[in-house]
Length: 397
Image 1: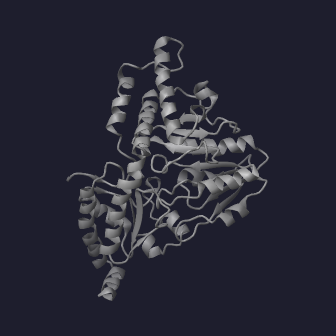
Image 2: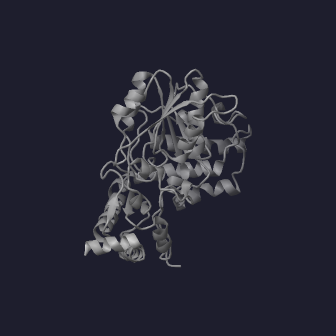
Image 3: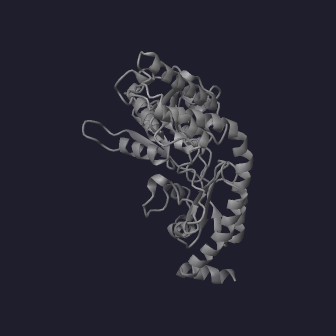
């Protein structure tokens, strides 16, 4: 196979070499339990706290507000279930139609009748054709029965950024808890939770060049909280279970790198994304951008190619060693069009032909040029064998 061109960083990212180096001692020599009273364990515990400080610095938070978890999904579930446990008399959850399955599937389950539990009232707010959330509709959805608002910071499929500051301010006015799934945003856009009105925030290590299997939940000091994983006293009694020190140390190092690379994300990575996007829209007739042209993550573009199957595009790109996605990696294998694109009203003929490219600081201009050489002929070839595609090609001549 030719050299891999990896443009699927919203699914997962390569572990940074510096992260591997930081983790290695804790896989070999520094294997003590950080909860142990002896010096060996205490030495390991200090590295866990250093990682907590590094992650807090990236988020503009206090280290005491950081809880290490296994992944973003655990962090999301912990936040939402905690709110429901702390406010048992409130039976309303507000979210959106375009959330990641980690939030959406949980909220939909909460809205169903379960033996021994009445269903919650779940409001899934719509988005417009550019994937943007209307604040008037959001404000109208809030009431005194709302236990938690869960709105993502950035959409994993389109990269569209939600108005987190405005949402948080409206929640704060009503005294409501606000949780955001920031898995795609952390390390790509500046975040300063000391100044932004967020009560709980979920993140995942493997989206920012840390290993899989580690994440974190930010819980603002003073927020009511109920642990999801009960057990020992770890994480200041907020999450039971012995800490995975190598993974936590890796996340801490990745947070340091992300803070250092934030400017690159906003400049060099954005420029590569824009070059790819403009080239595809110019070279592939019938291509369309999904999502707001400006209010997006700097690394993400989602393009639809009408009358072509997205899976077929990905399989042909794979023959050239080019990795992309048709949407969320958590829904791969489904033949249904993306729920995000359906919520945006993207036509069926375009939604089925959507491809997401998500870049990182490790991508190069040469890789982008290769994609621009390879992909337009693939689209033409697939349209030629599609009856609908042939009609479109004939009309374009």
